Length: 299
Image (cartoon, rainbow, N blue to C red):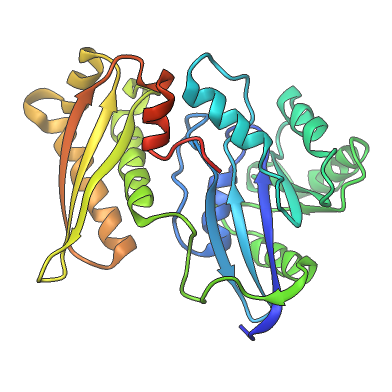
């Protein structure tokens, strides 16, 4: 990328479970944001940086807009979702192309007030019964709002994502890049490591997983042999949740660790030694101090 090019910020917004995290990973060509079929997996803004010959774009994957529960974590996640447009040069509302819901309308109602242009990204078009349905769908959604751009995509297959990147790059303001070309995120490595572990909790436990499981990396050090030693604490709220996470004779926790270690070695390119500990803190999601300590619900 040339030194004097284009540089800007793009916010990915919308209700939960429309594929914002999968789209971020496609846009930057690297898994950064964890993906789960469960709603409200993203608890804070996750940044990913895409550097092309034309522009450098900082994408922000925001938590899904939802009705906040009483916990500090839920409230802060919703605040982060509603504040996702701050500083953005383009706002992309992502929807599931199979549905236009009250949650989508609520997101539109909020973000149409922003100063930045609002784009509509119609995701999951690979799941539509026929491509012939796309044009009528676009026409119907254009009646909801005068979108600056409407782009059908598939975050899963990558369909039209390169085209979207090109459109966004040409829409960024002129200016020098903010980061070197090798930088993938503005987030600390420790936080990304914790998110990779949290994703494997979701994957290994399925419907058993307590929504309130958090991960904190308490040690991250590089050894003389260049392997990385990581100590991680898995926070839950009850003794029953702890027992579920550990499993019979530690089998569940071992499976989580094995899967997480493989993902982390692919991400970091180094051998990983991962030590996990499960701790119980009743109602930790209501403890604003601990929520902040774990890095959740920030933007």
